[in-house]
Length: 136
Image (cartoon, rainbow, N blue to C red; front, side, top):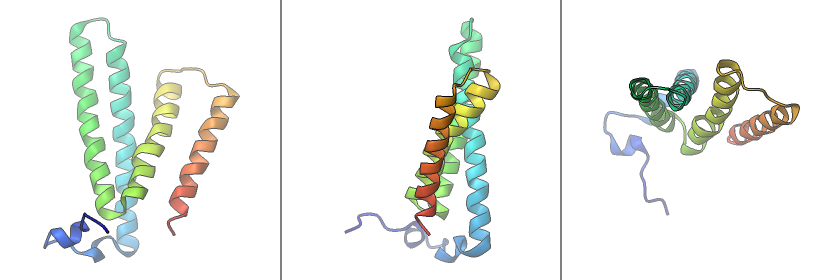
């Protein structure tokens, strides 16, 4: 028994057809892209904050990271609205982990990655794709 009603049953202005077809796919893809960018921004902002040498820079990067974090949460809520919690979690949590790991750690901070770590990234990515494709 489900305790929560779908959002379209709760809000009179929303309709289930809103996320159907090509339009729904485009909205979901757009929200997924925004979610990844926001997550990378939040992760990077908080990492720079942690490496700051002054209280002023620490606070500045905490604020920047928090602004991106808010964007992450809002885009996650949009993903849930236009898809499902399962898909939104796979994208917003799982894929965001990979995005932050690869882009923030490797590309921005130039942290070294071993072949084993790259293999782990690939395995996690494949697992996420199986979760996402399993919905169809």
